[in-house]
Image 1: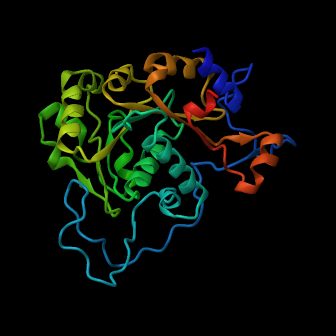
Image 2: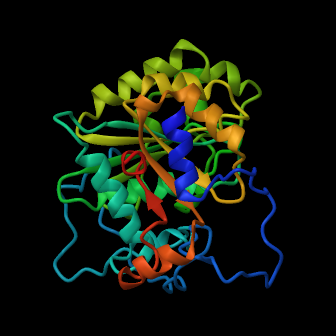
Image 3: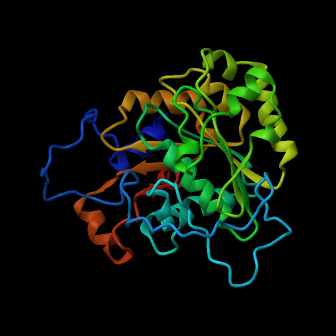
Length: 316
């Protein structure tokens, strides 16, 4: 716990005082800090929709053998959350930061295999975990050889499907409650190597479903059924759902999402203690603010270098 706490202190997310959960008043600024990339804000205006749909894919996310003809128009990404368009672009600050996170996951330190099943979690709601889950899945799917499957495990507030312009009528809740085959629940997206499983309509007993043996069976099934995929689980915030700790034990690695000014120190420390620091493969500091020295150091790199910092980097 001591190393994790010191790492978060060095990042500026927590200090000697507990950060306020309220955003700064409009127009407030100081000479020592300025905001860098904020994942809650779009990096550019969404592109106008085009008429032609994307090339067909199979439900698991691989390109269909019937490839689009030469000269076909690119996907429109119509209906996608406009913030995700920044993650798709190759020149945006957000896409670059997600590539850094992807690199950390695909190339871990030491002679160990990269995690294939990854949970993205926050301590409290509204820290950006679903956006990070989506962006990480996009970045993985944009790799040369990697495929990604994103699964919405936040059955209380399922939001993953809407990020990609999909409905949430049928999803993981239906698999856990009624045994509907996972293959029927997988949705293709306009990104060729990315597919998703929505959460489904919120059930009356989300804690019981996520705390049952069926959850472990589901994680095991997707690992065996789709061995070529990196599976991203968008989990409920730990403070709202104790069963999140169960999912953390079933996956290979965990990415923490911490929004500056939102997370309280005690919540973060409880999150790390519950998950176990050995499971943490990365930490995303959302809406991170540079101090004056960091602004001078990172200015040549576009001023967004510290938006994401990996767990391992912070322990140095």
